Amino acid sequence: MKYIMSALAIIVTVTACTMQNKTNEKQPQKEQKQVKKVLFVLTSHDQLGNTGEKTGLWIEEFAAPYYALKDANVSITLASPKGGQAPIDPKSESEDFQTPATKRFYADKETQRFLANTMLLSDVNEADFDAVFYPGGHGPLWDLSEDPNSIMLIEAFHKNNKPIAAVCHAPAVLKNTKNTDGTPLVKGKNVTGFSNTEEEAVQLTNVVPFLVEDMLIENKGIYSKVADWNPHAIKDGLLITGQNPASSEKVAALLLEALK
Image (cartoon, rainbow, N blue to C red; front, side):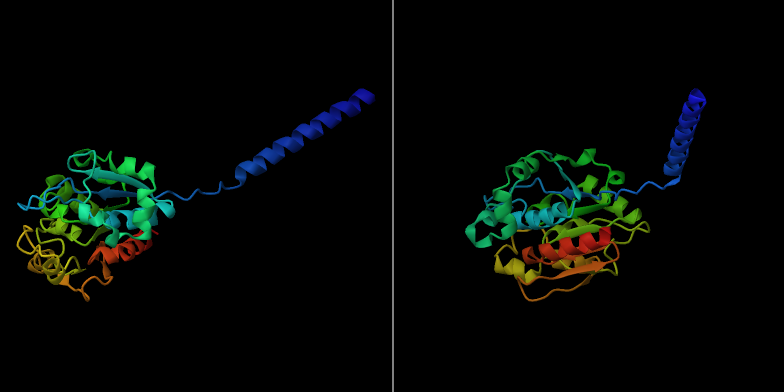
């Protein structure tokens, strides 16, 4: 009798465990929130026309969106036409243009190394990302506005319904981008970018290869601006554009909203 009771106890225990396992199998697994991936495309151009001065990306326009997205748990990849170190406009490093984001960058050795080791733009695949962002600075006027890899990427992001963001001089990258019907990508879209009066204020109107405001208007974009150096950012469909360095945080906020 003693052995029979022991056998029954074992059978009951095994049965209970089996039923519990089946119950657990039926319970749906809690879905993990997918991490969004954003590609930052940076200029490789460091010469300010024929002035003999240096240019590149404007560091605040990189730092503010970078940290806004990073703090929101967005995965960021950096790429540039030449790869490696993305040049920083020396003027953007002066004390007058420092912000909390730039100060954070200069104390952040890891991100400085990240910026020094951008991947080649030609190795980038649009399918690997949820959105693309272009920081400004005068550099993009010379290289990214004409870069075939950049143009193809932007058109691929647009075709696949993914956000495209650019701030200050970076809307220059939209100069040669087209819709599938061959019309300019910005045609009929509300857009902004560094204004003619702002370019005049920094005395580079006759140095830059073209004016961002003029180009967007010539490409049939619906251009708008606010008073010089004030924040202004617009989202129209997949396009997100900002007028000047002060607009960087607004562009980042619109991009984060578009990624939700």
